[in-house]
Amino acid sequence: MADVKYDVLGIGNALFDVLVRTDEAFLAKHGMTKGSMSLIDEARAAAIYKDMGPATEVSGGSAANTIVGIGSLGARAAYVGKVKDDQIGKLYVHDIRAAGVAFNTPAAKDGPATGCSYILVTGDGERTMNTYLGAAQDLSPADIDPAEIAGAGIVYLEGYLWDPKNAKDAFLKAAKIAHDAKRQVALTLSDSFCVDRYRDEFLSLMRNGTVDIVFANESELHALYMTSDFDAALKQLRNDVNLGVVTRSEKGCMVVSSEDAVAAPAFPVDKVVDTTGAGDLFAAGFLYGLARNFGYKQCGELGALAAAEVIQHIGARPQVSLKELAGQRGLTG
Ligand SMILES: OC[C@H]1O[C@H](O)[C@H](O)[C@@H]1O
View 1 (spheres, helix red, strand yellow):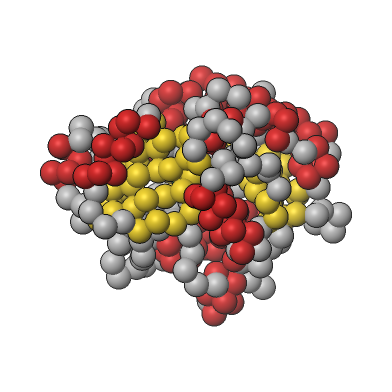
View 2 (cartoon, helix red, strand yellow; view 1 turned 90 degrees about the horizontal axis):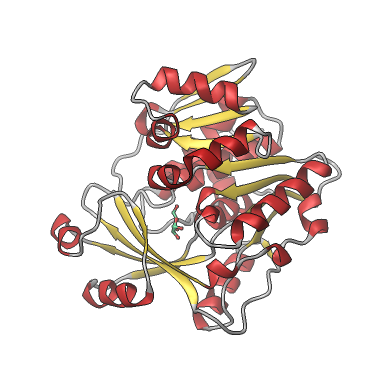
């Protein structure tokens, strides 16, 4: 798109990730549901952290991971999310700007600390997240700059924004500005537990045209339509949104619109180390392709490539240049 300042602008909960490899016994001891994202308070965060082994600390946040991935692929990317002006918040701002992402949301001067997600990664690579939202819960419509939103070809929003009190108003404000400027609005359903919390609202956003593109994995899709029948759920998705993108782990992805149903394969990986951010990086590759007007199959392959990179190491941010990786596979042209 010639007249855009950013190819994609993401809005999400700005979270710093504290990741550790652990076993099922740790999850059981702390009453965690494997594979879930639970919201926790400060006291529980302290209790979990105290019991964790040596951790890897790295910036995260679902939409932020996607936006960093889009930047790594060589597109113009921007992010809106709330941190506090504390040490972790400063690290967060450094990391996202150092990744080439435009980030101008003012940090909170007071209130809760920068949010953190305490992530337990079991031997099978599955991640179990415990999120203390902290300052992220104070993202509000005042943080939405109309000119920045209108300057983005695609505005990408995370379903997790439905958790904090004011963020959904920020979400709705951004979607309206984007549509008034004839831009596209994309939503990731975030996780199946999030879908269970906000099913009706997410369906309304799709059916009333607040969002144009939806990203979901299989379990989110099943949760959305409360069915275990994949084909039936996909058919409903196709009716409810302009473009639906469903990831299916090693089975690749399905992209559906009123005209098309396109499959793209997954990228084989030797060993899944940590699935944190798999969906985020898939969305990065896909949205990069969409911004470049690539066909849906190529968008899906770019998504699969970016996801394959991120699941082979700890943490949800790419550790190599995705642009180079995609170039080596002939996927950027
Ligand atoms: O999707 C993974 C991300 O979700 C959570 O928000 C964590 O911060 C993590 O980086």
